[in-house]
Image (cartoon, rainbow, N blue to C red; front, side, top):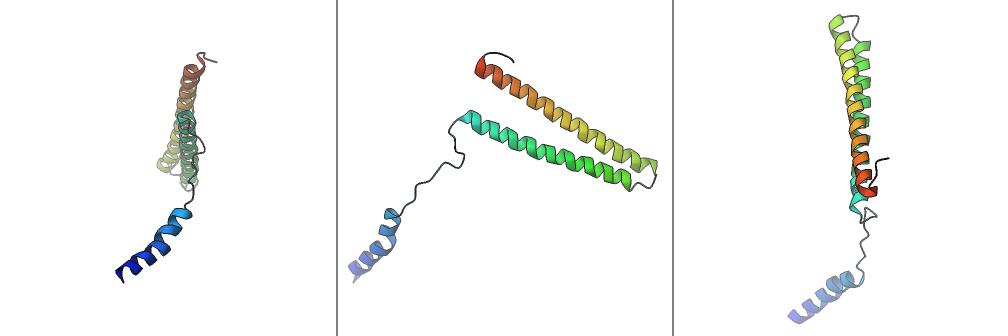
Length: 110
């Protein structure tokens, strides 16, 4: 009886999993570390750009609902100013990193 249970377990649970096993594909579609790092940098830049846009809109909204109060107008303007400055820093950092990576890969700065 014990052998039948083991045989049935083997037939129904072990054999189908070994014969129908799927081959896993690489979800990154690359094995080159430079491509992976490039995609990570692009994703981070996309997220930071979206955050900068949201902060700019938030600053404009604060300015819009300020009702002429100088303190609220200043807060809205400052939020917009810092959002633009943050975006400029992010773009500058990307340009520096891109230049360094290109210099290391090609041996020239172009």
